[in-house]
Image (tube, rainbow, N blue to C red; front, side):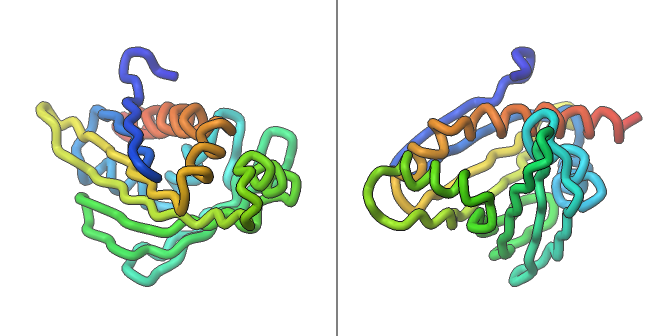
Length: 177
């Protein structure tokens, strides 16, 4: 995790909020967050690649990413955009139901409620102007249950997002040059 510019973490009932500030204006940050060629370079924890990154950025549009682990295991992610306000806010669903069976089984075991694991969550990403052409990104995830949130936290969601945001910061710096 980047200690000079750490991710701040807040939790509430069924909610996880991650916040980080980047040294670039909102329009550039939004572009790097939503353009497939850029997302493919930064999405996911360290060592992961994204051989598939499709984005139809409009309300009702879908996205489809395939994160590939360093071991060659694919982790597909699908969702639908519910709201898109350029340079301001994106709201979308996230479904991980196509993840490997072993991962899904681990989640079911971690949740421990006996209910079927449903990975659907709603994520809101906001882009806020900060002084001196900086931008604050806030990632607000609403989980279906607190048990699901707890399982994601235990399986390293904060660490994974922190690494992904470090990679995003590197993409910001690479693009600004």
